[in-house]
Image 1: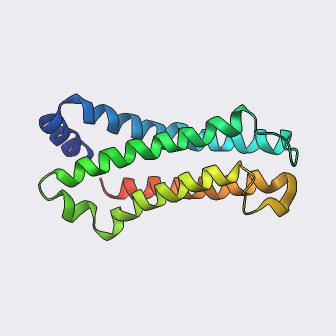
Image 2: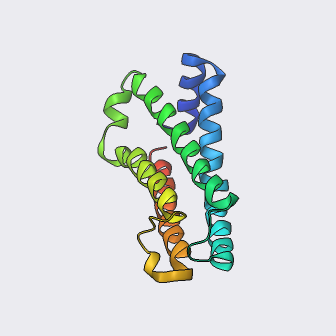
Length: 148
């Protein structure tokens, strides 16, 4: 279903509220989040100190990823309520989009916390974890772009 058809159905069904959620989710996910991941990875590599208290960036960044995933889940549930939406958005290619989003949110929390699975890499642990997160986000963008 083309992007314009989705937004037209969204506008007719629920007004501008869902279109706004979709547009925020799309802009933040495609343009802002990948750039933010790269910036945070560079920053964390420069200022990383093992055992140091978590700073503002380490606390705020995972919340932004959670916000992105939350908006996506809200819009995905809305799409399931549309006629034919369950068959389309529970199908194989698109079902990966919300699943990878939830995995990315979990990884964002682990990447900047004490439970980083790559903590044995020392200073490079946040960058390696955020590189995996960037790959997840970019693959998620490609999945969503393929459904237009």
